Length: 238
Image 1 (cartoon, rainbow, N blue to C red):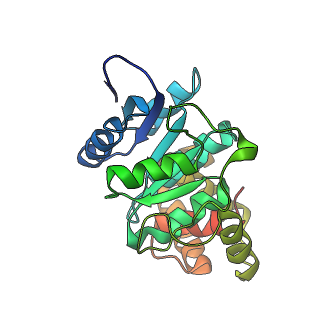
Image 2 (tube, rainbow, N blue to C red):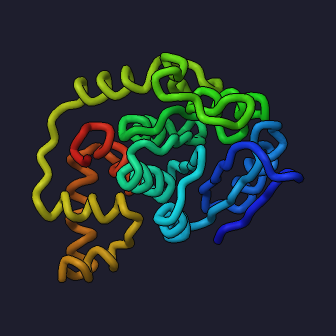
């Protein structure tokens, strides 16, 4: 699902918002389109539509919402960054979703905000990932440094993403996953169900669940989202 919102006349930056929750993406879009330097907001509700659109053109900034209970937001962010490494990605998260946000930043997202950030805070976030007040992109070498990192308390407060990446990965203990466990974890990172992963690996869904339980135990994860976030955060998945 893709919906467009524009100022009249159309001018300024193009921002895309990805989130499966209609209420969240509509609310975020309404705050973004109110910014004077944002001319167009495209609202995307599913990962397939997002990747299809990215195959033909890219926005000035991609805003991706994450949820602790599901891994689709993190998967969308990492797939977009894998396909378009230079794409400015801003992650929206909640205080209880710090692991997913940290994982996205470790993979290349340039910053993050609370999902309920005000329009002013969102404007600040966009400026920190490369937009000027006139809607043009700031050259990469001129971007302000450091880009603030997630604290779980206030928007854009903390240390730089590069610091988060080195601190989290270096301090994490080594985890050895089997080949099957890695394949299952990779499928989870792509938003696939246990049944879909099983069909691709020619294994039963029960067997996939067994591998999932084992990798959850090894990673100390309670669910799929935490397992995927931990995999990226520890550098197990690239």
